[in-house]
Amino acid sequence: MPMTITEKILAAAAGKDSVKPGELINARVDLVLANDITAPVAIKEFQKIGLERVWDKERVALVPDHFTPNKDIKSAEQAKLVRDFAHCQELTNYFEVGRMGIEHCLLPEQGLVGPGDVVIGADSHTCTYGALGAFATGVGSTDLAAAMALGETWFKVPESMKFIYNGRLNKWVGGKDLILYTIGKIGVDGALYRAMEFCGEAIRQLSMDGRFTMCNMAIEAGGKNGIIEPDEITRQYVEGRTKRPYTFYTSDPDASYAEVYEFDVTKIEPQVAFPHLPENARPVSEAGRVDIDQAVIGSCTNGRMEDLRLAAEVLKGKKVNKRVRLIIIPGTQEIYRQAMREGLFEIFLDAGAVISTPTCGPCLGGHMGILAKGERCIATTNRNFVGRMGHAESEVYLANPAVTAASAVTGRISHPEEVL
Amino acid sequence: MKLQGKVWKFGNDVDTDLIIAARYLNSSDPAELARHCMEDADPRFASRVQPGDIIVAAKNFGCGSSREHAPIAIKAAGVSCVVAKSFARIFYRNAFNIGLPIFECPEIIDELKEGDTITVDAATGAITNLTTGKKYQAAPIPDFMRQIIEAGGLINYVKGRVKQGV
Image 1 (cartoon, rainbow over the protein chains, first blue to last red):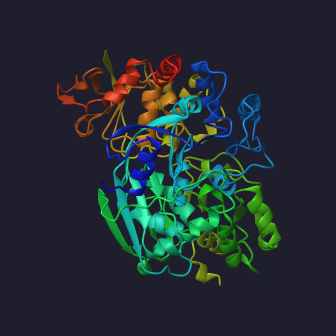
Image 2: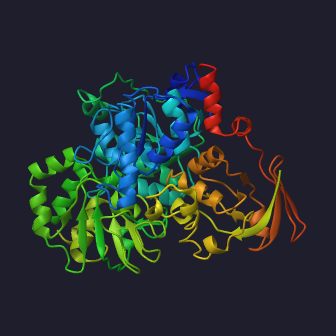
């Protein structure tokens, strides 16, 4: 039976020859993860099961990244609960502040996720790992607790949607623009319960960082997972990095899709998603005059090396507008070090930006850049919901790192060409 | 079991930040989460919601984050169930896992007003708007979800499997 890449991975994980959309399966998982917000609830639920040990101490990853370094006493208590559990269970993959990173930047970087894996995480952006050709999806804390005990979970096999991106990308257009454009076309529930498979010439051109960005935001269209067939670029990324054996799956040419979309990327320019939904995407040239108070470059969506290099390319020799705060957050300690080695920090500091330790921080309105009533922020993050970054009457505009950097310089939403 | 309560009406794409803003996620205490439930959507909600009240919303309720704190906050606020045109995937799973009854019914939202009283038969999905007298039928709960409910939630279901040595 012809299958999509998502169906093939799930079939293998369920020990079956084939699966079809709508089928309920029990699948083994290769890795489960949680953070300092979701793990405390998962740990309490796990303890109710009555098992002394998690199913595999090497395959339960805990990453305190949301409210860390601890932003207040309550957050410190939550982080402590996670730390104590990790130590008591002797978890191999607990990442303390100082060795920690934003979970979806960190785990692929550390080689903990590979092509063909099945991963669930108590964080909705777990779908990021689909960029490696893995099946990865977000779940709640209770589902995570069950998987911590059993090493497996249940899934309804999703229908797949195929998105074909033809042509070569324009300058300053990357994974963020493709995914915002796509969500703009199909809406925030346009892929509800479904797998989003990204393919075509433009996807093959994307670096791993750009692919992570695309799959990261599949959830913003309601998708169960985003996925890209692995290729030579994937191989170069995982070789010598990924710790477990991996398998490259591809979709059969005659696999069936619930819907197929085809886009000509030569017509796509950098996108900006207006408040208060990621589906409110429009080309930056049609943004009109939108003055901003803050710009944030970072997050599990755009906190990787390529993102920081793009921002530096725009910011080199420029100054951040005097009415604007520019906050730059490298996604992991390794990215932080690499950016420093490449001299990007000099560029950022000269421009008048602040550079933060890795944290989810402002993306979810946690800390490190909260907005006051009426303030506007342009951010490389993933959500622009009401109150997402602070006051319920503040606003978040989503964009790629180059547009965000350019906007920080001009003080209003701007195309990178405006400052170069 | 019949659930009955006054309706709180919400629109499309009510996200998890509206249900419980991340600034309150430094706690997982249900009572504390309940105090801030729906705060950025309707600041009156948490102080005025009555035990048994029912949230009725349009499409894609619970979109966004995987935070289980969202259905926990709604349940702890005293809401007896949520009826919506559709639910976001992770919220849907979480609601079952923590024991918040939810029902998919595309028709009802367009024909009721905030403050109407409705009843929902949790076993059959039959819904009646007592204010207008109109009747509706929610989509049936998938069999597998029903098994989890009958086992007393996912954790009890897993406990059962662990005992059997599976």
